[in-house]
Amino acid sequence: MVRANLNKDPDDVSKMFDSVANRYDFLNDLLSLGRTKAWRKVVTSIIAPKPGMKILDIAAGTGSSSRPLVDKGAEVIALDFSEGMLAQGRKQNKDIKFMQGDALNLPFEENTFDVTTISFGLRNTSNTLTALKEALRVTKADGKIVVAEFSHPTNLIFRKIYLNYLMKALPVIARKVSKNPDAYVYLAESIRAWPDQAGLALKLRDIGFKSVAWQDLTFGIVAVHIGYKGEVAKDASAKP
Image 1 (cartoon, rainbow, N blue to C red):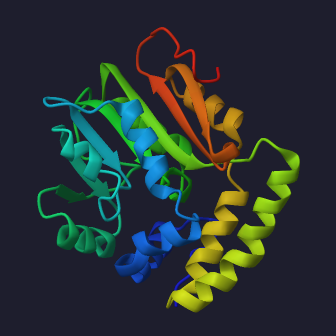
Image 2: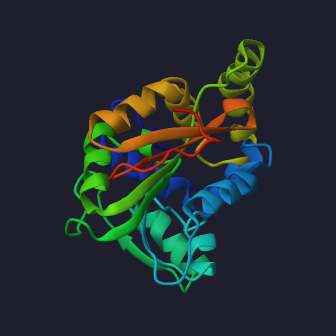
């Protein structure tokens, strides 16, 4: 069994995801208590995909985040570091364009995509700021980034309950349903170590994204951050 450490060595992380690829989507739905699909609907609505729109889905895994974007007619590249996840994705989504690549060194020219997006993968990169800089580089001048990531519940009581679930219940469930439960212990630890909503917003601003805001989902278990390459009016429904 493979378990990546929190230094997030790229080879360790890739091997870890290779080992859970065939059941990754099922386990995500189970361990998120069935909220994954609802979260993806919100992300899709924020991206607002349409025919002619070019989207780069970074850390796309098996393509579950790319699927609704493709269904709306957008031109999507689903990029991931793990060949195991990509192989599973190609089996499940034969009409999606998958590509192996590193979020820290994207194989695209500047100003290529209308939208860059990453769902539940940014915290697994070995250098968050480099990954965001690369996303900024390949985003068009009038484009945006949409980041969906686990975050910090805003209610203190609920946060304690949630963290207890992550560190106690989640590993127990994973041991019963996964061949590599250590991978899910790593995922739980990586969520606890991740910056809160304001912390991630600051990182986005620091590397050059403008008008950064976020929207909390399920009491802040997940936050969707939006940033623009150029200045735009802020969405009144999102927090500054």
